[in-house]
Structures are given as structure tokens and as C-alpha cells.
Amino acid sequence: MKRRTRNKIILWSLAVTAVAVLVGGTIALVLTAGTWKAKIKKSQEKICNKGWECSGSKYCCNDTITDFFKVYQFENLFAKRNTPVAHAVGFWDYQAFITAAALFEPQGFCTTGGKQMQMMELCAFLGHVGAKTSCGYGVATGGPTAWGLCYNHEMSPDQIYCDKTYTQYPCVEGAEYYGRGAIPVYWNYNYGAAGDGIKADLLHHPEYLEQNATLAFMAAMWRWMTPIKKSQPSAHEAFVGTWKPTKNDTLSKRLPGFGATMNILYGESICGRGFIDAMNVIISHYQFYLDLMGVGREHSGDNRDCAEQAPFNPSSKQDDQQQQQQSGS
Image (cartoon, rainbow, N blue to C red; front, side, top):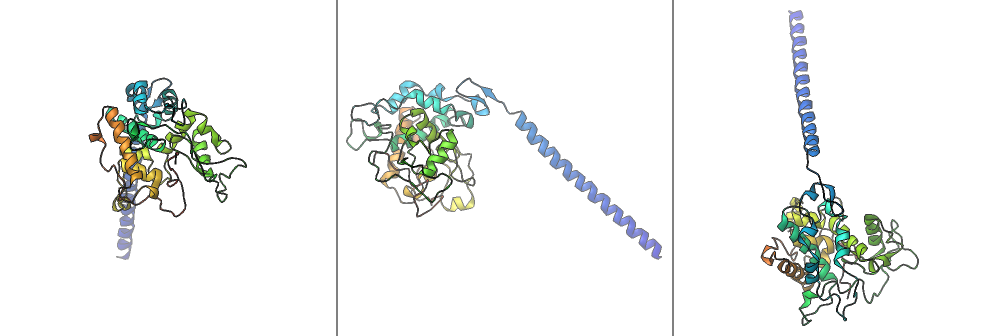
């Protein structure tokens, strides 16, 4: 009797083991099949090459920027930049913008989605650029939104923006890190990070951003395409909708759209403070450019302000989100 019971136990154990092996093998096969399916899907992604402007990327299969943004449109958007009263006459031009964009178009800069989304992103990015480099004012000829790219650097800096506690990008003796560029860069650590991103030694030579328009545009595009933190979206991702907000983001009223781009770039200096002028000016430039490009401000998208958004990175210290102040201030 005991022998039969022992035999039954052995047989039962063998059966359980066999089932476990079978199930484990099935799971392993499913995982393996899933992994291979993902690899096959990735390998089957269409890659396109369009010469110097966009190559080796799925995004290059869409229209490139030069397909829908021409010299005359650049001139329309920044009509007053070379007037005698402007402060960067002859500096900014279409060729510098397109040359800079070619570095980021394969990553999806203004090449994500359909043509309307591409044009919207162009206007969104340039809306920030125009607002942050404008010398327009309420009664200026052509209106305040016609004066983008009037500056390429902060006119009267009251400090050199050197944070000696930041050792990864230590201040270089003699260098001054005041605001420069298309979306002005401030502080030694931001010059260092942007320089790494565009492969230019901006830590030692921050002046490059007011000497070379292509580098100035490149630094702004790098900021647009790069998250402040790995767990957060870039301005590009927040605008085109590839970012999926967490529950905490939703509770903080951070949702995809133009408003989130201001939150990412400027944080609490702009966002969560109601409908302040500094925020409204940026939105006005974005919508003005949509009108000029023929898209229309009615297509400026949902969640276009950040008046009630909690900042992604609240801080009492002036950091990357807080220091993008208007270069002409």
C-alpha cells in the first residue's frame, strides 16, 4: 500500500514537473516570438534618404522642412529683424536655420506626423524663438510679433551667470555665460550641456552663440529635442503628442500641447502663475506664425497655455527652466 502511494506521489511529481516545463517552454517561446516580432518590425521600418537635409531615418520619409518652409516665409515671419533699430542686423538668416535643422530632422524635428503637424511644430518652435529674441512692443511698426530675431544676445547683463558649485561644467576664467542664442542659453552648466549636444565647445567659447547663427539655432533645437531629465518629455515630444503623461502629470494639469513646451523650457518662471504677460507673448508669437504660414491659429491645438500647470521641476534656484529670460531685457 505504501509502495503504491509512493509511486503515485512520484508519478504526480513527474506530471507537475512536465507541466511546469511545458508552460515555461511556452512562455519562453512566446517571449522569444515577441522579441523577434519586435526586431522584425523594427528591421522592416521604412528608412528614407533625402540627401543633405534628412537621411537614414523613418522621419525622412515625410516632407522635410524645405518642402513647406521657404525663404520668403522666413522673411515674412521675421520681417523686422534687419531694420536699423534691430540689434542683430545681418546675423540671422534662412540658410543658417535650415543648416541647423538638418541635424535634427532625422530625429523628428518638424518631420513628425503629417504636414499640418510638421508646420505646427515649426511655428511652435519659432514662436519661442521669436518671443525670446523680440524687440517689439505694443505700438511697434507691424505689431510686437513682427520683431522676432531682433537680438542674438542679452544687451545689458548684470552678472556673468557662473555657478561655481556646478563641477561637471566648471566656469572658464574670462568666460561670461549671459543669455545668447535663438532660445537664449544662460549659465555655465547649460552652455556645457548644449555644447556637448551640438559638439561645440560652448563652455570655453560661449560667444560662439552670438557669432554664428547656425550654432545659435542648433543650440535652440537641441534644447527643444532634449529632455531636461530622462523621466520627462522633451518639448518636441510634448508638442507632437508622443509623450504619454503619468497620473501625476495629469493631476498637475501637464498635458501634451504648446503649454507643456513652455513648462519644459521655462518652468515656474512662466507656468502656474495664471495668464501672465510673459506667457501670453509666447503664445501670441506661436499663433501669429500659424496665421502667416497658412495653418491658422484655430489649429494651435489643445492645452496651449500653462497658466495652471505645476512646473515639472519646481526649484527656488534659477535653473534650466527659469533662466530662459528674454535676451533683450
